[in-house]
Length: 347
Image (cartoon, rainbow, N blue to C red):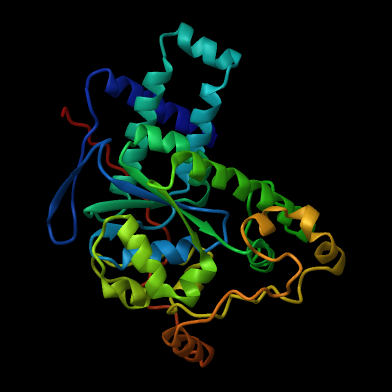
């Protein structure tokens, strides 16, 4: 049903695009500043295998006054999957082209749909950002339809990511949450695809960030990230928890699995939580199960590896978190609110 709905919506965009030359979105933010976005607007896509720090990264970016990411849209990876299917050399592609629906038209419709969703699902800002973890599997395609876009690929020790998935019961299509072996294999395959996409896009447009670096040395890491995005430094990114629910700040939802973690300041609580939970037979065969661990620089035989030394501020944050100083803010959204507004203008 969802696939059919998405196909119908894209068909609507195909119709609209026959009457326009360029899609342009107009929006006003909380203080009535007006922004206009189009296919050439700079934007950033944050992704990675789920439970790799994508939510923390987007929350820290959301604390910057010039950047807006917002919650996951969930629909964008599905649209990209549909578009990928229509591009394969199959009978469906030939049937579409026989009906006069070219690949260029599908690109234009996909671009228009994604731009509408990204621009309208949160407050506008000078730099728009999208965080749907699996979008980085389509980084090359996104770099084509949005020529001024950039990408942040979050990397994390796969053992930590998988333990988080399993212990928190985070459902991910294709991952068997009753098996560390299966999840580690799927993690390795998924991050290999994303990394290859990132490398194909190139270093000038795709940057890899280790979750471990982000929580151990947040200031140095975020300085690199903001420099890459050509955004000015802002101290607020180091205190994202203070911007939750504020106008132009960090918007969270109770329905997202990472919310109870990102309401806290950057801390070490989750860094090595996986140690002691992975079955012995899986540990012994880790090199074969998850070859991407070593390729990414993680020692598959170390339990845990030496991730580095934390900044003093992070140690202090961790002590405060362990004392239970942080609770879910009352102003936090109780559910995901979805609104849509289709605004298409001639350029």
